[in-house]
Amino acid sequence: MSTSELGRKAPAEQAAWAAPKVRYLILGVLVGCALSIPCVEIVLRLLGEHTTSNLVGLYQPFGRNGYKLSPNFRGDTNQLVGRFSVLTNDLGLRCGKNSRRSGTAEGAKGILVLGASQVYGDGLNYEDSLVGHLASLAGERGLAVNNAGVGGHYLENQFELTQWLYDRGVRPTHIIVLLDPYLIATAGSYNQAYVGSDGVLYEKESASRHRLTFWLKRHTVTYARVRNAIIRLQPNPKTDLTSAVVRLYSKAEEDGYRERTLQFLKHLSAWCDERHIAIMLVYDPGVVEFTFDPVVRLGRSAGVDVDRNVPYRAASSAAASLSIPFQDSRPAIERESLNGQPLALWDGWHYSAPVSATVARSIWEGITSAPSRVDVH
Picture 1 (tube, helix red, strand yellow):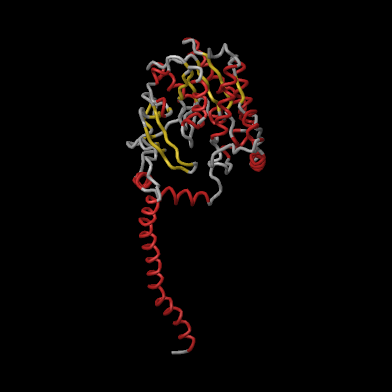
Picture 2: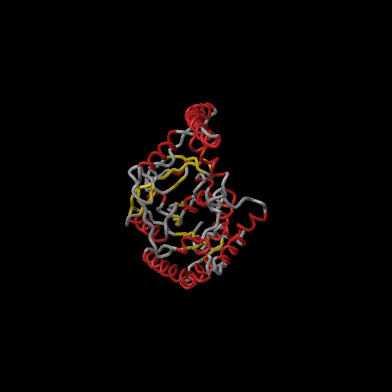
């Protein structure tokens, strides 16, 4: 055998000799990781960690393939924004620990607040949320506040829920609608979702892998710890700007936003007028509006002309056309920003507890400064 043949054969023999060792090494690492998970789980539980319900059972099918919160729900979850609990009353309205009474009883006189996840209070305990703070302020005057907000709802979903609540005895004297940019942009649309048999929202009928994920979330504390640690090493998912965020503030979309919001408000206003219910609108800005330069840059790179005032102008113009009282929350949030308070939770979109309290005070000041809107005496 020639020297060249030996040279060619040697690497092949070395690879064949090394391959089993590499396989054993990989197998050893995998087995080590698998065995370490129960150990980590035990340590975390000894340190006081506990599993959460992960809000399984929170939702139920409703309306036109839509959804709402389940009645008398009690659960908690550990998400990227932190650990928080969710309670609902007899009608499936989110409430606090001290107000788990029938929505019918509390709704006899008072305020019904409509909106999406900001109103629902995603990431916060009810008492720390915007509506929770508003309910506390109103409660000092003997006025009840019911929270109809549901994460992911559009205005049409909220109106459908409002009609259902009214038919079941909730008779508010006033309705406050918190309009965020997403609600304004999706006015006239209806959000549909698949609710699994486990009371969890899915984009489509849930697959087995989704069920496995939810099992791990509910029965282990390690899953949430590892998931949160991995995701926090990456860029903030909600503050990473996308074309969808840019579209919310596109000048080219403003007329469409205004017209669709106006049509919805006409529908809501007519329904409320027949029942002698007053309406108040509040602009609920996106946190990106207070650091808007990145949106401008992304819009420029996509050839989209953006303006932070587009959703506000569309909603305020529609409200003015119908003479509906309209309040802007941005000045109050800007003051909070100047005080150095964080505006949002870690997800970059939902208000922090201090900002939620500030917006609630601003809304309450708007209510009490116009006694003709809401009788607080």
